[in-house]
Image (cartoon, rainbow, N blue to C red; front, top):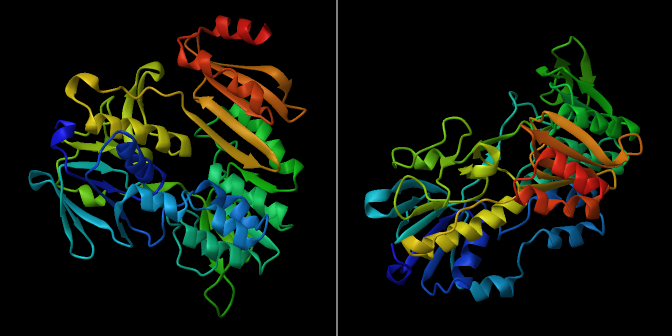
Length: 412
């Protein structure tokens, strides 16, 4: 639909992706009605601090709570949004271009952007003392719980689990970090680099249990609170507080029978290179969207802050654009993780990789830049405590740079 015919756009999801869509629509000249639907009652906030500064209370709890908001009230007011917070999208009726909400409202519109994101995958127990961390309310509950214990167990050494473990150590808690794979963050980082992250946790006093999953949660006699975890290798971990970082479930339930095609492999909503779904006038962005990326030989779906912002901008542009002025979304993926006072950064992809070369620093010094190659090309740059050096190689990943060309660039 041409931009001049659009009058009302509904954005489902009030996180980073949804807010960025709304801002990009306004920046693109859209003056019509924008309805922003959010399941949580809070104004749009940033998730990355929840597992780091927010948990540790760095700068004071009040300062950290203020720091999670993505925009000040005056900035949100300037967008003139129809905010529908504390409401869940329950159904999409594409024929009528209508989104039905949990409060009974029905929003009829000209364009829809799906940015409904994900929820934390729940652990297989109902015992008290077992937490997940995805939302602001999760973080508040976990911060309060951590203040009353001296030891925690963290299940899953992905980004959330690793950051929670680091934050808990900052607070002086004993930490057991349990991961079924052979190295932390194994989905995103090649094990040859992941071994460095293994040692980083151990350097900082974490009891890291690798190659063993959790098979049971036990409570103490006479109460319904977690006390011990049973692992698949026969060992146990005792802890009065458990944080489960088991990944996410994508919020696609409300799209059932809508005709929006879901990705059978990556999950989420299947988009084309323009962030369009299988339905005309319906786009997607953020954690929930998968799309084809020409430099990585297939489809991607990224659960990272930078992607949420960048993909939202392209989705909004293309929703407003005519057929001949749409842009393809071909970013250099980027994400970071703050752990133990250092920053882990990744440009591109770090797994799978055929070759790994440490081009600056060394694993032993816990300060390095590593190149990752696949099929004779540079596909990823990963750094630990090396921010300026990592970012200088972004142009190499934006181009089709061979492995030898990349090594020559690093040597020069």
